[in-house]
Length: 166
Image 1 (cartoon, helix red, strand yellow):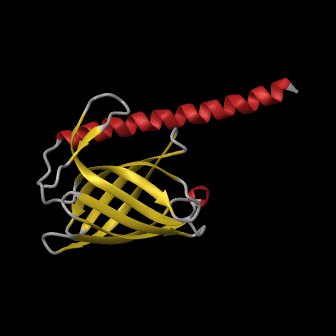
Image 2 (cartoon, one colour):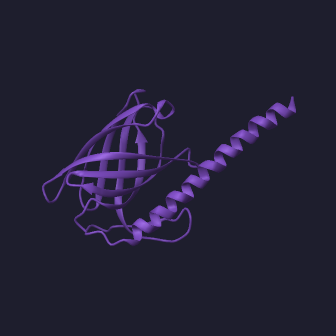
């Protein structure tokens, strides 16, 4: 009776440990991205904030590294937390238009059955604020709200200083 329970707990601890390693890999990428000086008016850079599901009330921390891949095309690499301690990562392509002051973006990405299937998202960003709305195949829908960051400390799990009204 105790042995099957221990086996299940060992599997859970291994899964949590692997998730934690993934978070530290993202933090190394985050540190490198934050050390680069992006133009102030550019969408590319490091962003930090929260995600909120309007479907079930789930929410957590959110960080993103946005890179420009070409004219009108960016990639956002997200690192989020669920239930405060469970990290998960995903990437989303962003199809972007801008008028010099406001970026508008949209796209879709299949994150797999376990994460809710296909996500469709739209949003806007200024040089300091990022807001996206998403809808998933599993009926989940919600928002990502972030601000651009300038400085990151070097520790795994580091916090960053947000841009101040640039």
